[in-house]
Image 1 (cartoon, rainbow, N blue to C red):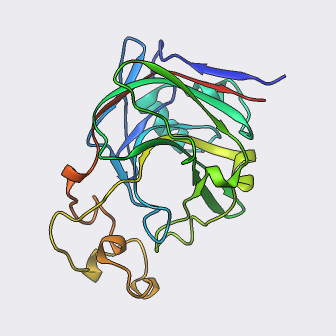
Image 2 (cartoon, rainbow, N blue to C red; image 1 turned 90 degrees about the vertical axis):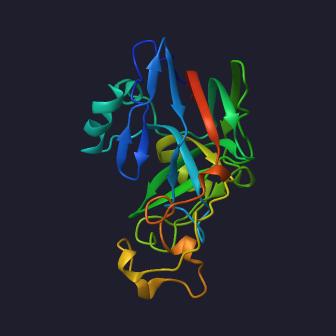
Image 3 (cartoon, rainbow, N blue to C red; image 1 turned 120 degrees about the horizontal axis):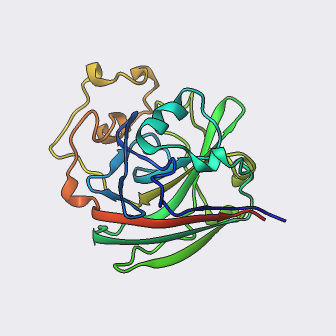
Length: 249
């Protein structure tokens, strides 16, 4: 018989957090058993083209221990009840149910589940694009199933500089050893706030010689970190989560 993880946020965020910007954690707003994130959401450029694309991080939970990082998360999000409860990292056919509501303008973006696994020396990330979660204005409960069906998933890989950290793979590599769950806003339009050209001095996260020929400047530098973006084209508003339940087979 499987196990079921339930987080109602009655006693705090339970280890769920978000980011202010790359590598800088931020606590989710917590009130009356609800966690909320408000725009501007953190723009993740780790998987920009030729990877699977940009997305915005709403909330994440670590599902495997991460020495050093766990204490940083605990400082802003409290004890991780998933890790404390010893729940499995094999999410094959796990059912994830979320009770949520939101308001604002998604600009056509979709709320989906993002996950990843360490496979050998690299990380294989994936998004469950085949089962988007509707952001309703009143509370609604929705369930997605993390089935090993490749057509349901978009494998994300990494941007041009992340070949030593991320790679493309298959969902069958990911699901047995999931390291995190992230609610993200995907399918977003990231446009520089002004015309730009690449200044090699700004490339601090990769070797210029490794840049693929013809790659647009907005994909060479990290959007929202190395250059400003037009936030009017990106989702705005808030997303509130009341309960997350994970049912393991």
